[in-house]
Image (cartoon, rainbow, N blue to C red; front, side, top):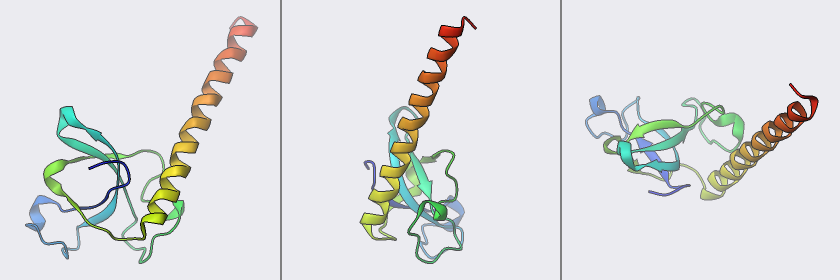
Amino acid sequence: METGTQIAYIPQHAEGKIDHPDVEFGFVMDELPEQEAHRCRYWRQNVKHPATMDDLRTRANSESTPNECLVEYMSVDQEVVARVINYLQAEQVARTISRTKWAELLARSGS
């Protein structure tokens, strides 16, 4: 699975049932091959039609999910996923630039 692949997380106790109440829907951010897992983002469960960043369960970080609990499953329009991923990646770039600028300012001030 690659970045943007929509997924369903099916916990082991759900016994493969996609309609189990504990199943969560989301998308892949990246792969963790050494852990046999993927970093995923999930939509909040009480949102019927996720469409914005506010519909993510968490904006702070992706969650490592074991491959054996993931199945490809399209739960929203792929355009929504692409838009959210673009926003998340832009946020990451902005944070990196901010940290670099902050480090430069500290270096100039001798701190």
